[in-house]
Length: 345
Length: 260
Image 1 (cartoon, each protein chain N blue to C red):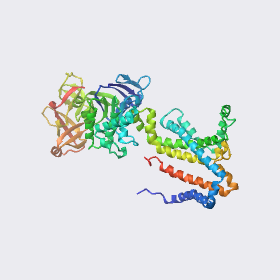
Image 2: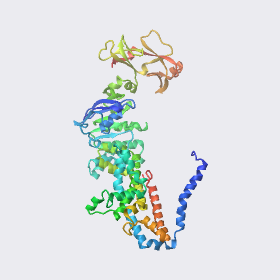
Image 3: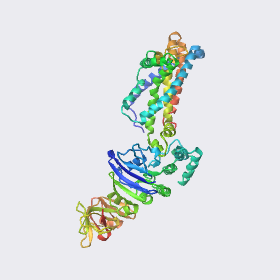
């Protein structure tokens, strides 16, 4: 069950092309309002693209006549579980099979199986009004899977949940998504890391980056992916041993991967932990020194994350106190060239 | 704590309530309690009561059969001219019933728009029991449509979209998701339509006439009795008041959100 999707939705300024291979989970990452849900709506048949085509398992869904949602077998699971309030959990899960013409008894048996699969078999007789958020989302997952979808569409399925129940549900999802063709919209790096084989990063309605999850998170090429991965990124052109940005910042580093030529578009990526913070620029060492103004301080594990615009540095609590850091204080971020990964954009 | 209301509004509010309740008290005070049984039990009254209940039930069924699809089309689709169409369809809400009756007469009457065609087919509608049902349906239909369209809009389309992605065809979605979700709204709409049909007078008299046992419904009977037999009129009115109170009770319980 492969998905090929190319769609332009003019009034939302979305122009996206992507593929999901058979049995693969692809995470659609990106800032809010960037068109992720629009892509899902196009795949589910809830929105007609102005141009483009959707091909699922070799079947063209956007021909002269748009294949309606109910004939696509693309189950959609959103942030809000949207369980039918007048049906019990079991009847909710049996809804898909019943709609496909399975007899009541058989549909219920199948529903019981799926409830057990997501660890919700004890909730079978309950109405949605008497389920917690996490329980309801488990039932909703069972309901989506029971419909035997060719493509599973997940729209931030964990975003509305308590932090306490999200990890368990993520584990459940990881188990049931194994081998299923899935398109997962998320802005959570953990979802991408644990559930997705590949990620596609969207920004302002366009694909800005895609690739295997580990690769994109380790070597991001887009600002959003860098932020999600918790990395600093400076974009510019490679020149004289440093990546030079348009705003005049220059970060020295060691190129990896395909050789860079002078003037190539490149990114310099480094960890906040590799950044040292000084009140006054240090001299002499082969470091990059960036003059910045502290914008924010926040706890980060047993350290303090010092934010300065789009850059961040991690320092010890002791160092933060010693440097007397506070928003508005001008400081210098220094990073050794050996700690900076440089590659073509 | 509530923000509270200015104290002076209590005076007109109380006046309004008294204005509505006092006439009810007055008519109940006029009821000749000892004779109620015999007054309601007269042939003419029994005929009127039975005709009213039968025709109102029939027109309520018609309202549901026609009104549910109308509400669904108005709430769930969009097409050019929809707003104008909605206003026109709801016109009987504000149209004087007598005018409605005349309009029906000029449509289905012997010389009406469709009357001649119907006559050729051997069907004569005007001044029959069917005409009573049609007049009642004409005035009651908008009540059901308005109340159900509101319930449909409140329920939203999100559940229906999910049902569709789970493989349910539009008819299945309608039967298993849409209808159950708006059932309280549908029930209260049907009850309102029944009440409106039961009280219908102007359009019925104009279009169906007043023939005992055939087209003379309770309101017509009360109106006719009023001059010759005031006690009888009051006794019959009491019957309608009781039905009205029951209707309000049922409609109140059936409010969306109350039963779900």
